[in-house]
Length: 164
Image 1: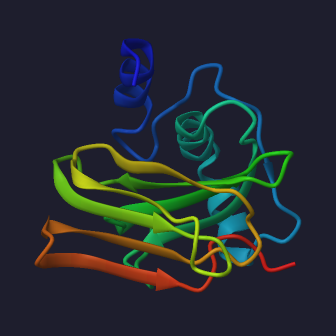
Image 2: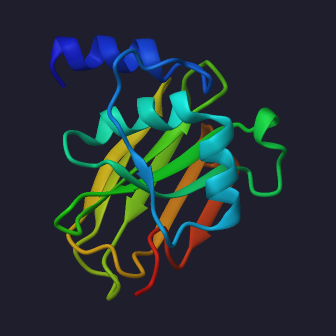
């Protein structure tokens, strides 16, 4: 990660309500669920800030999941963001919303469970970005806790991108 990218990430992803100054323009996928649409409407700066981590071209938010699931979005420990670019490639990040370093794990694979990309370690800001070459029904695993054996979040979904 370049110094400029690290500085940007430190500035915009520390808190979920961070403002991305001149952040990327993004749109919400037509296939996004109601929870994602609601989150995007309530938190456009956080969604724009997270998009910068994926890089240029990832301007379509596919899914946003406040974690742990069922938590009031204002009390979340982490937020899973997924984005799509124009060529159909997907990107996901797991944003750390607690403000201190935690063990984090993020894995996304293609529909066949192959071509997986994983990021794990102790992070104060986010895990990822992780990429998948085709977004159709891409399964995702997201974990976060004090350590890999003391998890407060263990989320697994059959898809983080819509099934076509």
